[in-house]
Amino acid sequence: MPSEEHYVLRGGKEGYDRLMVLARERWSDTRNLLQRAGLVPGMRCLDLGCDGGAVSLEIARLVAPGGTVTGIDMDGTSLELARRAAIEHGLPNVEFRKFNANDWNEPETYDVIYTRFLLHHLGEPVDTLRRMWAGVRPGGVVVVEDADFGGWCSDPPNDGFDFFVRTYAEALRKSGGDPNTGRSLRRYFLQGGIPEPELALVQPVHTGGEGKKLAWSTLEGSREAILSNGVASREELDAALESLRLFTEDPRTLISGPRIFQLWARR
Ligand SMILES: C[S@@+](CC[C@H](N)C(=O)[O-])C[C@H]1O[C@@H](n2cnc3c(N)ncnc32)[C@H](O)[C@@H]1O
Image (tube, rainbow, N blue to C red):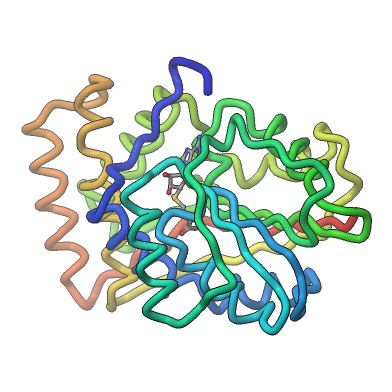
């Protein structure tokens, strides 16, 4: 991991809870993607940057009987919660390992290597993709979903929401990531020596429900990164959070999530 690269979102239990909302919101699109990519029972799978394992556990169900899943993340608290969830859900075919994705390297080991919303945090996503490609066996598939934050929008305009889109992107850049990674993924695949991938684009939109709160909770979860990177003052951040909270609660308003690029390629 380059020394200037730091994870921009608060992890641990709070981060886990936020990502469980994201997981519930995203599951139907992710399941469609995994099925189109050819996920079937018996496969050996890896979920890179798995956080609390929400997708890893779903994959464990889809590849049973006979298939296994390994989830890798650098957040030990989330991995512990993931291990507990696996026991609660009675899924013995999933394991979780603490590892920095930048150091991970397991050539020709898996049938499916999946990653979601990890690459936009990494300073060298092409390098990670190259190792993902090397990590699948011949016939195996690399599957990636990542965001393009240029797609966020609200109606009507809201100062708190605009603050979120601007400052989160800036904090991410200062932490070594790229908020527009989604649109670059095809190019990154090709640069990483992966042949032309299949492509799809999905985008969530909300007028209510827990998914609408993700903009607010993401801004709240990136508070430390926004302040420590000098992106905004505490007063500006608190005012934006309050404005965005009220906007989110108003049933007349609309918030779209980021565009999400989905790519997969078979080796
Ligand atoms: C936005 S979350 C996505 C989690 C999960 N893939 C999902 O879609 O719900 C990004 C995850 O990547 C992990 N992460 C960030 N940088 C990492 C790195 N260098 N190595 C391993 N995990 C990393 C974080 O701890 C976090 O759990």
